[in-house]
Image (cartoon, rainbow, N blue to C red):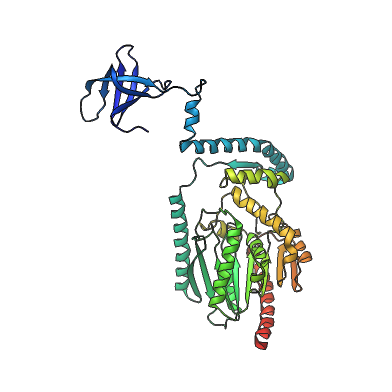
Length: 461
């Protein structure tokens, strides 16, 4: 606040020690106790002044100064506190105060969640010996921007390295392309091109929340004549952004639209399909509500789309979530149990998924979770706007997205060509379930049937 050099000032009359700093032609001082307002020291009264220099001995000099205390504007002494609000550190303090208040407001709901979770998971918890509840993880400091950029650069380098290694093994043509969004973010995209089969259609894959792994499905599509494109949306895989954080799903929707336009420009006159899983399915559904996008797509296939996502308490969506998103968007809610809801009944597939450093295994961040709830609320009111052909697949034992949402999509959509298939006992991530070969075949058969219809349309033009 004050420029160097520093002087220690002593009042010879009463021995009071003042801390003073050189400021142009005057000394600006402050009592060491901090109780007095700043002094302006001009030549008048005699004071003893010492200058502290780490390289020289202490030198005592005499100065004449006049102590002029700033008059207090408020008799309560609040003038200093009011003035401090003008400094840059004050807004940060206010933000921390608001966050603390928000955490206190959440405490009653925390205990409500704990009781509800214990009732629902008592049997399983007793077997594993773990606790069930909901806690709030508050990081000691936010991840610096430079560190976030380094993290995304490391993830992108790893994603590119995997593609290079896959190409060296041979047997497929796999390419990487970096796609720049209208916001200036860089997204990692890749493509798989059939080598021994004529390309008869395009499939654009959109992954779900916190994941990115669809290489096995892409190879199956290649074997059946489909060229595959995949885009890691913001905060996922090899794309920019804080890992696992989505500031707005509308960004992912606009990015998908721009990416579709690029794919279609590179592959004219080929029918294009979209595949979306979980939150990726919700993004696809919201994108095709745009009449322009609807005209580009020959059909969509969805697995476990996030149409029905229930919050722990209704007030979370209406009151707590919006406030918390404003105050602490990157904070994380998590279950206190030792394991999360399983997404597959195949332990080996789960091991491969959750040991992948490109898969985010942390707790859902506040803003990300709220965006999913907001997207779900929108879809519930706009399912009738879906007019493209679609196939929706869902496991009846899915604990993350409710299969009733898929049934409602099938019932309310305006599409004349629509199909639904529910798999009894299957969980959320259908493409890594033990029955994945059957499920992939169902999707590919549906695409193949619509490709033949598209070929007839192209031939008649």
